[in-house]
Length: 174
Image 1 (cartoon, rainbow, N blue to C red):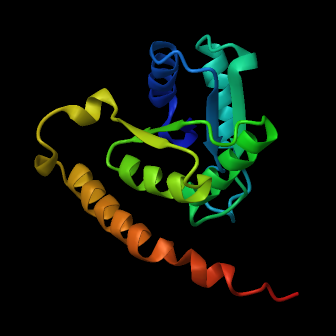
Image 2 (image 1 turned 180 degrees about the horizontal axis):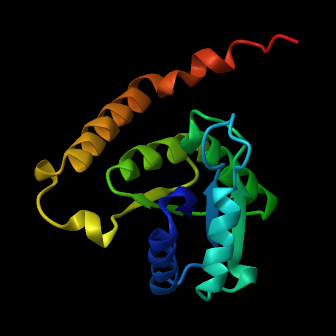
C-alpha cells in the first residue's frame, strides 16, 4: 500500500517494492490535492493509479483506496479507505506494508494499525527522495522541521488518537 501524496518518484519506489516483495496487490491510497476551497483539485489516489500503470504495474493488481475529501486527518482517512478496499476484496486480515515518505512512516504505521485492527499485521516502509538524502538531516531546516513535526505527530497519535475520539463522539448538526 502506498500513500499516494508522496509523488511520482514515490510511485517508482512503490513499484520497485511491489516487484521485489512479490506482493499480490498494490493499493494506492489518498485524498485530494490542495485545500478544500480550491476550485481545481485532483485525487492523489487516481493520479497514483495512472502513474503506477504507466510504470508497468498490471491494472488487475492495482487497487485504489479513495479517501474522503478532508483537509485534516488525511492519513486516517486513507487508512479508512484502505480498510474498505480490503473488505471489498475479501482481504481482511491480510498483512499490509505502508510505503510513505521519511519519518511520516512511523505515524502512518500506527494509524493504519489502529484502523485495520489487531488481526491485520501492518509494517512500514520509509522512502525518501534521492535529493532529500544529501547531507545530514540536521543541516537541512526542512528535514529537521519534518522530523520534529512527525515525531510530535506520532506521540499525539499514540496518546490521543489525534483527537479523533472527540470528533467522532459529536454528532453533526443538521
